[in-house]
Image 1 (spheres, protein in one colour):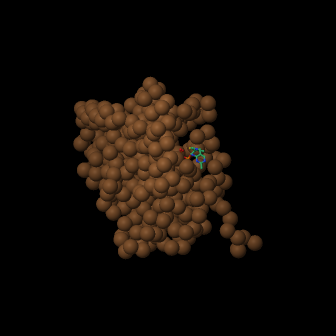
Image 2 (cartoon, helix red, strand yellow; image 1 turned 90 degrees about the vertical axis):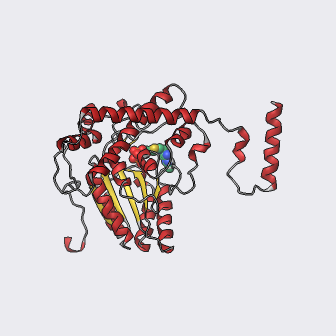
Image 3 (tube, protein in one colour; image 1 turned 120 degrees about the horizontal axis):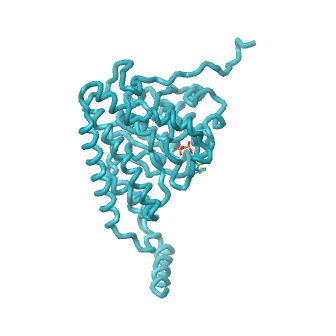
Amino acid sequence: MSDYRFVPSDEPVAPFNLLAQDGTLHGQPSMTDAQVFDALRYMVLTRTFDEKATALQRQGRFGTFSSVRGQEASVVGSSFALDPSKDWIAPQYRELPALLRHGYPLENFALYFMGNPRGGSIPEGVNLLPLQISLAAQIPQATGVAWGLKLQGSDGVALTYFGDGASSEGDFHESLNLAGVVKAPVIFFLQNNGWAISTPRAIQTAARSFAERALGYGIDGVVVDGNDLLAVYEVTAAAVAKARAGGGATLIESVTYRTGAHNTADDPSRYIDNDELAAWVAKDPIERVENYLRKKGVWSDSDAQQLREECAQEVDRAVTAARAIPLPTSDALFDHVYADPPALIQQQRQTWKKREAQS
Ligand SMILES: Cc1ncc(C[n+]2csc(CCOP(=O)(O)OP(=O)(O)O)c2C)c(N)n1
């Protein structure tokens, strides 16, 4: 009977790993020390920003905010495998360090959460799609961008970030299917952070891993330790190289954990087990990189402190600059919808302005 049936396996899948929490190496990483220092800076910078943004939200100066806390290695390691001059990112809403490395200014990110539409606009020449709040909607866009790059004869790739929850949306499945058929140079980077708000991974899918769903679409699937910067870089760089060479798409499942709240409107103490959380806090990705550098003798307490001071200054500068930018007037509602607004829209804008002046 089992000859002609594909049956799910119960064998656990061990995520690819290079670096133990104490900084011991299990293999040969291709990230250079210079890249690791640079990556660590993005990790610490965004953790600093997360803390500041949460405080500003509590003061009513920021809107609802989703942090990347706990997932820094996953996001930074993957983004370092990309070439910002030709590769594209289609983000979700939790990937600040990848956006920064790709050229999006920190100040714009602050503006976005202050409700200023200027924050959502991507500067010319930066290969990013806007932040996406509607779950999974960026995944077909990434497949489209990647297919477009291929048709243009570029060797650029597209990488899209999304969560375990988003992988239950139809957009995810349709995108993987199309990418498999047209061999689109796209990397589907699924961050399995254990939770989709309060929905645990265990009831998100009956599959043993998210990555093996790739096989059903004829593309490669990989499971990686998402708290290991070096391992995430390694598997993403391999997927990028394969895509550039015409080998098509890869689904990477990065196994990590959201050690903060889903966002500033969430109270995870109502559904997360303290022991589970503590076990993941003990696998902190920033500490892991610092342990690695310490073991190599190239990192000290004073280096760590200096990095944190520089990051705090950079975050303060960005927030101050964003706060100095005036909010748009309400008729900005009509901006950026049409390059050449039709008569009806122009008329509505005038009516709106007149009413506002009277009120
Ligand atoms: C289409 C859609 N449905 C529902 C929501 C509400 N929502 C926002 S975030 C979220 C959970 C997302 O979890 P996951 O995809 O695992 O990503 P994570 O936030 O954990 O990174 C839900 C259900 C939404 N934004 N869009």
